[in-house]
Image 1 (cartoon, rainbow, N blue to C red):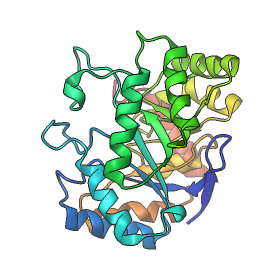
Image 2 (cartoon, rainbow, N blue to C red):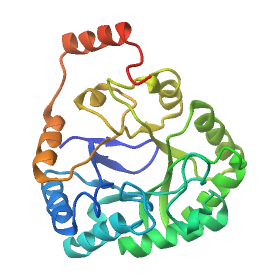
Image 3 (cartoon, one colour):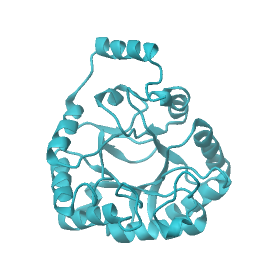
Length: 274
């Protein structure tokens, strides 16, 4: 398993990351642990969780994915040889009501402290390697968000921070605020990126290259690993069979003619997902 550095951090992780959003809904604890064991044996050392997982988000089981990962971590031991990433829910709004804290979610200091403490308890660890905002809070000043995240870093509960489902403006503005105020900065961004959705290349890829921020793409295939701004590609599974198929992508290096053919399709159908 090859490795890549995330952003400007000290995290050098496997180029394949195991997503866990099905753990506790579509995969029970036994199956989830088997998937974790298989990924671990294959050299995957980065796990991606979230406080609202599993999906579909539901208050009855929010946090179950973190608890399942936590019970596996306790059984496995050697916490320092794995990298754990989790996420805090963004604000609840008309389009989506977060399945935690009664839907009264935001990215302010109070919510960050509540969320990180809850995640650490479920994961059974005293720190996470990467703490990500699951989606942005556009009505909250960027200074407030970054200061809240920085407090978690200064408390030793978080090593580095990242964002998810963010825009080019949001990422750039956040980086500027962090530099101006001397707070922790976003080292990663977790967005959809695949042959079906190449919108990341419009503007965000340029920001990542110039600012040394790593993309953690979700909903991918092996094609994502051919891009220099990609850190670790997130795969998911509800069974061992699915996992084995996805893990095979780590050994795939797409030749230049295949990449060119992919680009040709993109020019013909620019945005397949709309």
